[in-house]
Structures are given as structure tokens and as C-alpha cells.
Image 1 (cartoon, each protein chain N blue to C red):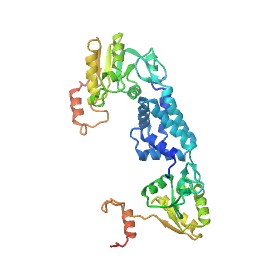
Image 2: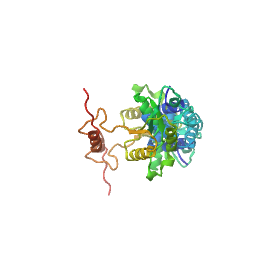
Image 3: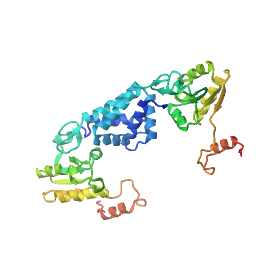
Image 4: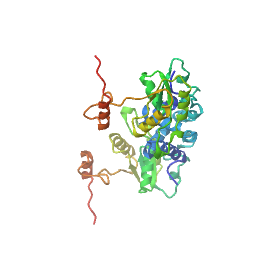
Length: 201
Length: 201
């Protein structure tokens, strides 16, 4: 016998399985939805059901999309000569938000990680090579994260693409805008020094 | 034109409406579910749909329950002479977890708050008075939160119940177990001093 209805514990457990949501937060969310009207909970339920049903991977860039090819790959105004390789679909969003890139993307869906048993075959690397082999690509920007795994993935990709005549570049490392030299970590500061550029006036 | 499928933004927006979940966390949750298998998202969806469909308010104590009366109210072994009044269903759970209370409950579903336009009529106070008027209740423990609003609610309830011959008590205030006198805030320490008890040996 328990003071909690089965429907409540079930939702608390379902919320708890999400990353970063512990049992306390899961309870809070559940009782928030219980207090509110049923419509709120049902809207969230419908959005969850539509998530996989209405999305697929773009067969060109492997990004998550509702159409195949995705909007970016289908857009003639995007520059097919530059491919920006990212780890996750969220990275595409972040770069799109800058409006600083008008090329195309390629989503690896992860990074190389021997510890997590993620090798080249678990990532969308073959698809990238096929795209570059098809020609018309001048530059591949490797925009994996500036982490050990992201670096290893970038090096691996560079070797993989080296037989093909394509320039492989990597995002600049340095101080973040609004950052502080005094508080920058040693690695970042070293990289900012190594990557210093002439001031043009 | 956007790089994000409608189904993704819809779920991000739905998650963002939950308390304590900002747009960043909502994106993270959505892409976590996208990466995982569809089953995970559908299980959460079903739990959400069942939440209101399979729960109701107990007509006696106003707690959320799958049956009416709820398990606690239907349990003959619980002491009907003591009613513990709480603000929220989660408070019932917390008190049940202590196993220190064998009486019954009454859930107000909030606290008095003129700022948020919550008056006595928005809370389940009438139902409590009816229960006490029906007789057989010796003590009402007001277990509202030790906050301004919880205190105001407790005072209001005490006045409301004063014509009825029932003892109205409030949870003890003091240092939390494992706490530290040095770091206790002034209010808590004052209340711990005012509520000091003789040491029995």
C-alpha cells in the first residue's frame, strides 16, 4: 500500500530516466503537471510521440530532418564546396544561429571514443568520404568539440580525407569573446598565443 | 527555412514550459530522446497521458489518488483522530516516508498568498472544516511549510478551527538534524532556542 498512485510513480520514473533529471526534479515536474490542466501533459505527450515519427536522417548530411534531403542540403543557395563536420545535430543549430556559415553540414553523431566503444564505423564517416569523393568539395571544416575526443576525431578524419584532394581545416582555438586573460585556463591561453594573428588597421 | 524539424522544436518548446527547464536543457532532453530509441520517448508519452486519466482527488482528504477514497483514507488501521494538514501531495509522501505518523491527511493544494491571489476559497479549507465538524477528530497538525505563507495559512486555519473543539498543533521549528549551530540562520537558531526542551535522562 502506498500513498502514491501508480500513474504518478510511473511518470516520475519516466522523467528520472532523462539525463540530468534526478528523482526530486522528476517529482517536481510530475506534480507540476498534476496541478496544471490535463492539456499541458497531453501536449507534451503528443510532441514526444511525433518526435521519431516525424523525423528522419537526411541521406546526404545525416542531420535530423523532417524531409530527405534536409532543408540545408536541398537549398541551392548554400555553398556545396564547403562541408562543416559536427558531432551532433545541436552543433548545426549553434552554427546556423551565427549566420556566419553558408556551406553545408555533415553530422557524425558522436566522436571517436575507445572507452565508450565508439569507433569510425559507429560514426557517419563513410558517408562523408563518399560525399567528398563525389567531387565539388573544396574544404572540409572539422568543427568537432575542442576536447580530447573531438581532437582525436579531427585527426582521424584528416587522415581519412588526405588521399582526396580537399583542404581540411579546424575551428580556431583561443579566448572566448568576453573572456578574461587572467582567468583563462593554461591550455586555452597557450592556444590563443599559438594562434595569435596580426592586427590589421 | 530552418535547420530544425518542426517535431523537434515542438518538443523543445513543450519541455521548456516545465518549471526549472530552460531552452538549453529542453534541447538537451529532446536530442537525448532523438538519439535513443523511440520506445523511451513513447513510454514517457504514455505516462503523461495516464497522469490525469488515472488519477483523481480523494473526496475525503483531497490528496491525489487512483481510488476514491484514497488508500490512506480507506485504511482502517490509520488513526482518524489526528489529521495532518499539508500544502501539497508531495508533502504527504515526505511524511509517509518518515513512518512517524499513523493518522490521516488533508491536502490544501497550496498556501494563502494574497500576492498570487490565493485566498481561502482557492484552498481545500472548507473540506477540512467539514471533516472536523463531522466529529471524531482530536488533533489537527498543521504541517504547512515554515515560510511566511505557510505561517499565515497555519494562523488562518487555527482561527477557522477554533470554534470546533479540536487541538490545533504545528510542526516543531529548530535546527535540522545534521545541521550546525555555527551556520544556522538567525531565525532558525532563535526558534530552536525558543523551542528548547528539557533533556530527559
